[in-house]
Image (tube, rainbow, N blue to C red):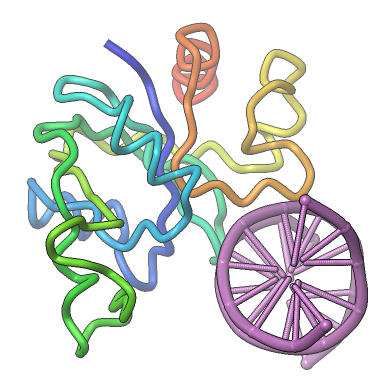
Amino acid sequence: MAYWLFKTEPDTFSIDTLKAQQVSCWEGVRNYQARNMLRDEVKEGDLVLIYHSSCKDVGVVGIAEVVRGAYPDHFQFDPESDYFDPKADPENPRWIMVDIKYRQHLPYVSLAKLKANEKLVEMPLVKRGNRLSVMPVTAAQWEEIMAMASR
DNA sequence: GCCAACGTTGGC
DNA sequence: GCCAACGTTGGC
């Protein structure tokens, strides 16, 4: 089992939205590096930190579980969708998504606190300029963030 | 709203 | 295959 961190803008889709829906697809990943991780490495049963970006309180806010591995993101074929990709080929979809299930809210752990923690300096999240929307989390980093949330 | 960092595009 | 221009991300 592996650990991940998924970024989302709460104005669009927040941890509360996920709680209300319980299970949701995680669509709209349009970055090849993130896509490759979703496609090749994110598996059913993996746990996911939900991270709120581009908002007042940026940071980790909860946990979800992957309940379905990679399958084609159908929004790439929908001209009405913000995630429409005119170059996407239905025979060979270029974008994929996974399904996640709500697990729990966590006490808010701010980005500032994550950045200030020496044990987390290797996280892509806190590295300057990193914009990955799907990134791996090590078991040690996961445990540290759980500890921070319960302090 | 600013702007640094990064990814993508497209001409050559 | 290079690289300049452009668009996007995302913290502040």
